[in-house]
Image (cartoon, rainbow, N blue to C red; front, side, top):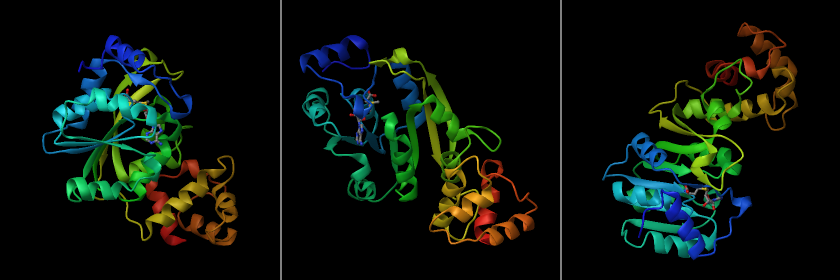
Length: 284
Ligand code: SAM
């Protein structure tokens, strides 16, 4: 089977199976061997690794992974791609394709079955419409992970890396930075894909922290506060938190804690660092 990283081979496969792209699944297939190599380098795949690939498409990156890893589990939602994957991956014995929605799958179970519960490496050219729930799901469910190397929309890569004071700063930045150290690997223009997306893309590597950079008593509560703080960006932190259902804090409590922390009563969530959110959460 020919390698799919070049446009000619990808087009041949798409024509052979008369494949119809489904926009709702965010299907943009990578056709650039340099970008594929850079993703492999950043992910640091070795012959010991068990890799989870989310959305293998026609198997382009899966071929690269299968040649480097001990084991690859590829989860693809579109059942029309399954016969194609059987063809393009036929020579590999170390690949399991699962036809499922990644958001409905118990990834911890995959780590248990395929890697004796040891950390997985996640590598993916993600469907952009569900990037945030995928990343948050992996982190918040405490899936054993060594690192995540993913292609995302460029703007999302910016949001993951930024800090207070930037318009891109938000709940995703804080969650990603709580769990990992984000590093930009490469910017990727639309002409590296078939079909071309309408947005720029970027490869980002999230190196999982052994221990979060801040300590909190209750991690779930921290993220409930963070979500509430950014739910209505224009509002002050005090207004956002007192309005948020399920948090059970009063305006007076928030005001007292802000004062104790030396913050203005009218401060917005976007001005607080991760450390400040952790202190706020513990004090409340
Ligand atoms: N990895 C391939 C590549 O690089 O050429 C395809 C990447 S494409 C951007 C995203 C892939 O994710 C598509 O194959 C799409 O069908 C699949 N996908 C979309 N939503 C999914 C979901 N909820 N669960 C699993 N796969 C999904």
